[in-house]
Image (tube, rainbow over all chains, first blue to last red; front, side):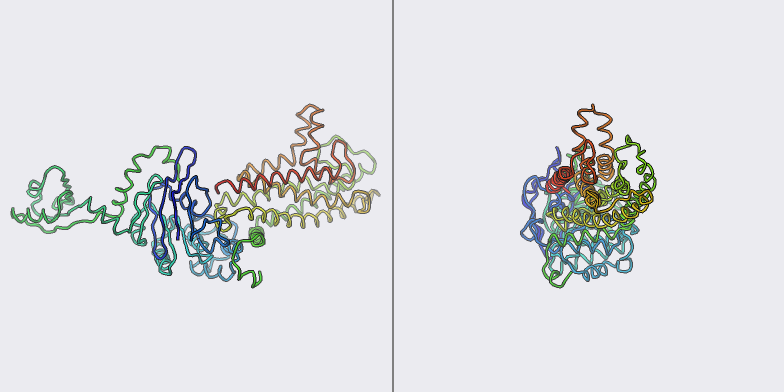
Length: 310
Length: 272
């Protein structure tokens, strides 16, 4: 369990994290969503105690990171893929981290098997591909068998097979009752994995709700109806009015209509004898929902804050 | 590790030391560089002893050489110290700064969020390894170098006044340079910057002070520079313009305490 209360972090003139309050609950995968530079990585570093908050507090299982006697057993983190000494073997990299918390050597072997690196355990980390480095990072996150796992953009650099693997792994960890907190700048990535999502933009909380609710709430405000008809021009004229946008797709017999519910379009068409070959409501995609949510925050960005990647 | 230490989870200084020991021994370039410092300490000592044997015996040694040039028989056998210190200094810096340049430091500090045990452990492990290696190397250099000097009947003996102290002081000094390097690297977090500063302070600073400052000011400052303070307790005889051994040792230790103190403060306060 992660509890973040009124968390603020200021770097010079930039408020990278602005009064964040949220809870990441155990038993589910929680997504942490925001555009690049929105403060996700900073928030994760604050949770881990790597950065000191300007204000507020981040607790893991009721305590700050540095108050835990064996931190790796409480929280495991993957912050960046290539975070190992390139000249040290994967095994020794994990072994020295394990040693700090009194974690047994057999656990090092176990996590190496878990992420599928057992055959290259004695190879230097510098020879690893990005995907293998990500797996090594995940192995180090799981080293202490922690109740909370935090991963910053873990699918970056993974091949499709690796992405499926990590999704299943994270769902499995959540099903075991662990807290899984996973950041991404792509909503579609989280849709497959996360049940709950916390959205931030410009360091501020934008949404904190189940993924389904988020999509539904966005869809309600942004209904889009797809109509396929052999007579698009007549249908257009029929429903064209202020507040309605119509876009033609393909060879022109498919219309994207926003601002009129599907039932109303069907009624109008039937009344006027216009044949419809298809009529359906399209849900806003996750990416659209996300863009809409964060667009307000993005608009206020100055070039200075854009340049400050977190 | 014993079964008992495994059963109780938690960060402790001894576990941090164990972790840093794994880090030190598991990178090949580190072990190679440590071996190189052994070779330099012994090799340069032998070269100095063989080339200086005759001038030392006949009293024709030039006395206006650079500050690192030995002026005594024992000093000649320890002639590798000024060069070995550059390697030890660079290694000490890398032991810390590589963690910053690779991002490993965030994994390290996630495992030990209180951070200071990492600094203490690095100092203890590096100091232990450097002292053990350098003590053996110094003894080898001293006895092998003495063999060259014996041909001219000027071989020093450990029972001569101050010689045993000088032979033990050399590894102590080199260990101190290593700790200084760790502290500077923790403060600066940049390999290039910290290596430059360490090398400058231990190798060039005393020459520069002598060259650039007016004589009377340089005479006041020079004895208190880290390398000159080191020379004070590494020399078996009292050298002009240098503190006597105990004050020299204390001044050298004061530098270490202050630097490690600053490093600890910075590590504790700064974002990783």
